[in-house]
Length: 307
Image (tube, rainbow, N blue to C red; front, side, top):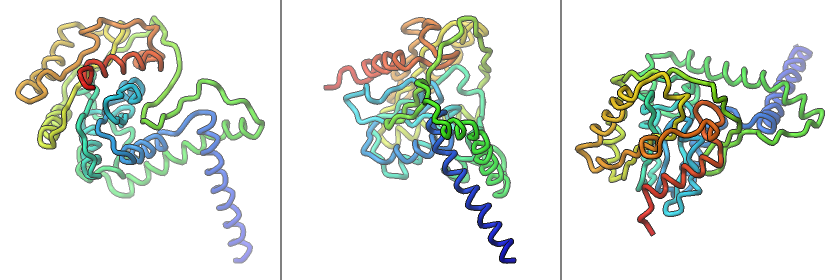
């Protein structure tokens, strides 16, 4: 029994050491894990007296630099695959933490109403209320935690190669992705000009209802709300028509029409035209320096008259 106990303790020590060391190596060579990004985002979002927040999917997460909004103290609280339901519960999280929000700027997309993503629920289900999880069906406590720990362990398994690189003192690449203190995620790459993507433009009642909830909550809390459609290029739009996109534009405009936000829909593509593929790291996301230019544009549109 003593030998068995000693063996178990040694194994536990080795596994614990591997997990801690591997996490460090992944961060160095591959950037922060998804769980680390989300946890850091939630922590930083309430760590200062921010009065302006950005919510949305990866286009906002990567393409909005809060440092370029000098009139406000802002934080990028967006994340990959977030849609209106995640945005709504993040807004509630901020309000529950007594954040005084003067401005809320949310990203949208022509496919934003079409999906209900559970890819981050192994983190979000622990951050949000039970009402959030009900939209995905009633999973048992065991299933939710099973998914959480399986994803975490899979991440640790994928850390083996960065661990070997660290041991052999392999130089760190210059293009490692990272999350800035202001919430923005920086990633690198070059888009392929021949790439296209076929998006789903359908409208889920659930996501439309959450969109309305965000508007209503902002009205009730005295928050100035803006909705932003980020830049697009032809690879994003070839599979759909202008009339199909007009339906989504009108849906957003009509939802804001009878509110104080009726003129607060900013569609960058409608105003500035399609962007060049050279501005993007992939089919979806802007290069960091282009994201800065986009941020300056949005800042001027919203806060240009503020001193």
